[in-house]
Image (cartoon, rainbow, N blue to C red; front, top):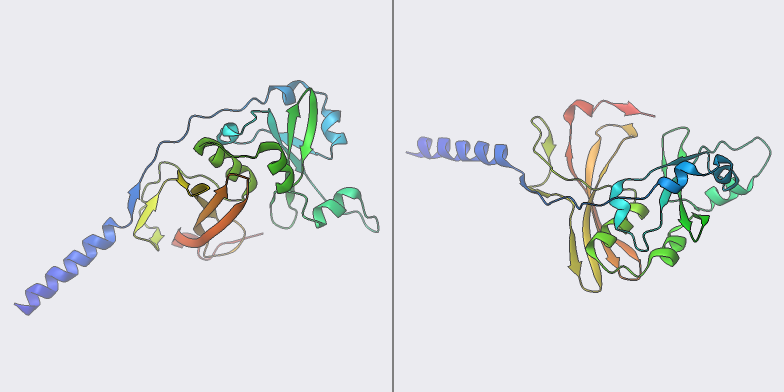
Length: 231
């Protein structure tokens, strides 16, 4: 009898492990951006703003209000020997939103088209001045995605062979919470040596544009990348 009970417990445990995590999907907001002013403008305008490249952000930034046309301003910054440039000083002072790349990173700012002019947004404080207050869930999602390094995951599915640290996962979604919004995002560790975790990042966004990170926890990884190093 004890042996039978033990086998049943083992079978139940194996089934439970195979079933985890429980996944809850949410619809992706149907958002879009106007990028047309950047496609027809003289490229020299953006060079004068310090941008080495202009690129279209994710349509998920389309919930921002006011709905100015917006673009990434990408800076391929390599400090010149013995010369301190204005861009170098600004980058060292954190006047950018995030960097992408390993040994030779690119730095990201934004440019908006407002009242017939292209205007650079260099910092989170600049972003607040343009877009706060935040008045809807879609605007909250767009705002946080623009400012934070983490991204939105939709249509999450369990992947065979992945290792999961949690019993439940939810697609990115926005919940009204007190004076603002609570949002779950995800961040994948690209660079460095493995393991390469995907992290669940939960933030609170106040109506005035203040972002508070509540938690930042590893939730799943691909064991095949445990020995992978990316520069």
